[in-house]
Amino acid sequence: MKICVIGGTGFVGTYLITKLVSLGHSIKVITRRPERHRHLRSLPHIKMVTIDFFGNKILERQLDGYDVVVNLAGVLNQEGKNSFVQVHEKIAERVAEASKAVGVPRLLHISALNADENAGSEYLRSKGRAQQIVLATEGINVTTFSPSVIFGCGDSFFNRFAQLLDIMRIVFPLACANSKLAPIYIGDVCDAMINSIDNPKSYGKNYNLCGPETFSLKQLVKYTAKQTKSNSLILPLNNFFSKPLAIFMGWFPKAPMTLDNYNSLLVDSVCSEADCKTASEELNLQLHSIESVVPEYLGDKSFSGQMDLLRKKAKR
Ligand SMILES: NC(=O)c1ccc[n+]([C@@H]2O[C@H](COP(=O)([O-])OP(=O)(O)OC[C@H]3O[C@@H](n4cnc5c(N)ncnc54)[C@H](OP(=O)(O)O)[C@@H]3O)[C@@H](O)[C@H]2O)c1
Image (tube, rainbow, N blue to C red):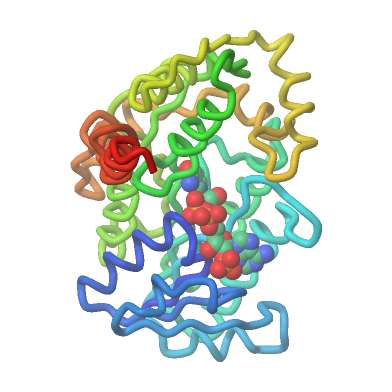
């Protein structure tokens, strides 16, 4: 199939595209900076283009003749022109409108668990509005996916906490420590998307996607500390102290946490049993646990961990 991926250069996109290419599909990636993504450019059957999404009929010309369009564009924190409204809503609306205009038969869109136009965080509100817009597009078979936090090599969850634990080696104050999450493996998210493509049961539906286990944020950070052999004292903060910490951290460049992230974490990022059953059955998922994947990329047993040990041994 000819598949066009928007937002395909990031964490999710890199996994998804690699899998699609290995299945023999031909991929076009729309990206703002193709020169930064050699890892994708060097794959077979891949084309990378830069366009103005809002230019007259430019997106339509790029999507014409494609079998599937996948929209993964997203930002966790908004900055300047990259507002949540712009990246999540406006781009999603343009992609749906252009796909419909040129008769693309299939559109996949990634949202987020708890996305809702009335959610407490701007991120989730914009994701919720985008999801509604996309699912309401007529004349095209749409499926949306709402994952909890996604993990895997190169993620910005376990890797980020590992980095922060390495910086805060004595005490690690943890905001929203009791928030619940059900992290899902990136390979399972990609399987869900790929298995849905020619499955009519998934047309017009949103799937909430969760991993097989639920943890508190504190448990996940403790697990990260165990993997990375960090001795930092993890100090769980209640909501009263979490909010000022989130506001304070939001001032830093590449903020490790913002007030909007805090607002997202006020609602547990977990699925109902019915959500899990529907996704597993209809999308044929074999979910991976954290324990079966994370040690491969974090800690002593991982490739980079082994390299670090050897460097330490050599005192380099
Ligand atoms: N990672 C998670 O835990 C998680 C959980 C739930 C939902 N999601 C959703 O899954 C999607 C992919 O996440 P990810 O972790 O792969 O994110 P990522 O690594 O940050 O990649 C984001 C992608 O969005 C594109 N993008 C960002 N701003 C854009 C803009 N202004 N115009 C056009 N494209 C823009 C980027 O494309 P270029 O820079 O190449 O243009 C990049 O490829 C996002 O929508 C995210 O909200 C992720």
